[in-house]
Length: 208
Image (cartoon, rainbow, N blue to C red; front, side, top):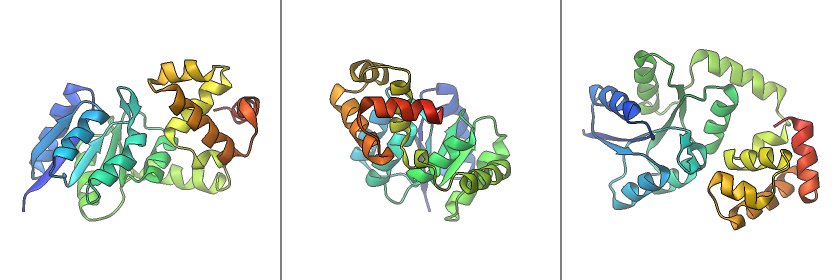
């Protein structure tokens, strides 16, 4: 049975390496997209891939914010986050967003193969050290309101904590003023604070 994949990353060398590994694992064709917008255009043209390999840092967007629209466009696809950002917090947010696996780009090719095979089996993949760190993080932060925030919401909260206004935030993140303002409103509701000053104080107190 033919298996297909889509690699979403803005680095050609990653496309080359990941595509070779995927073809060795029986995936053909392996599609390539350099941005979230390009990936969604390809999915709209169909057919949907069986596997998506997704970077976090993409032009104009976060890969974590792309998980939900990818899931809507290709509900059966397994999503593996493949990123240089290998901190445990990123792995936690990747799984929370709906990805089935998280792998550091610093991992050896054997780990990439293990991750793909694990996702094919319908299971979740984390490297052993990440899994242990994530379990510890969850125990220590079960009631942490930051755990409910998306990657974009965290970005906006961090910039608010730095004293930046909504227009400056919108310009820096490459989004509209309306998107920045809506994100700010969602943050107030999720964190239970009033106004920009409340968000700024929360950001400073929490150290985001």
